[in-house]
Figure 1 (cartoon, helix red, strand yellow):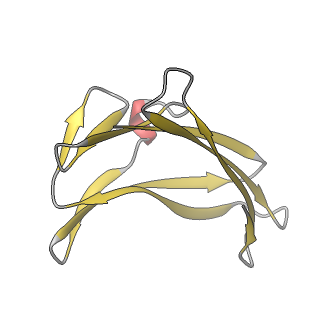
Figure 2 (tube, rainbow, N blue to C red):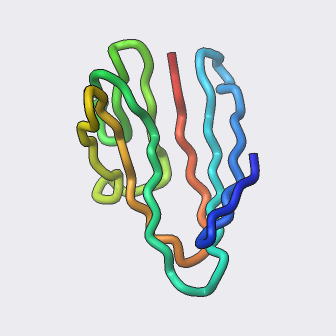
Amino acid sequence: FLYQTPQVRVEERFVPLDRGGGLTRLLKVIPVDSEPVQIWLRLATGRALRRMGAEGYQVDGRWTVRLHDLPESQRGQIRKVAEQWEWIVPLKVNAAMTLHASYQW
């Protein structure tokens, strides 16, 4: 998938995990201008999010999402919106960056 906002261009693709039972989400985020841009990446939403180690969350007790490319201090937060919880990650984009998230069920 290719899409663009006024601040960033995003290249996104999904690749099956080698061992099956999930996907890897590859995101390449490229700033449009030379100015740094602050954006938010939503990795998951669900009725319940439970921390699963340093890299991810279990969603609704059924599947797990992990973010592999950022230090723990930059792995964002969970917040409640209406009746759902969401995992959001702030990204300061000042050069092209690639992120890898895995979704396993």
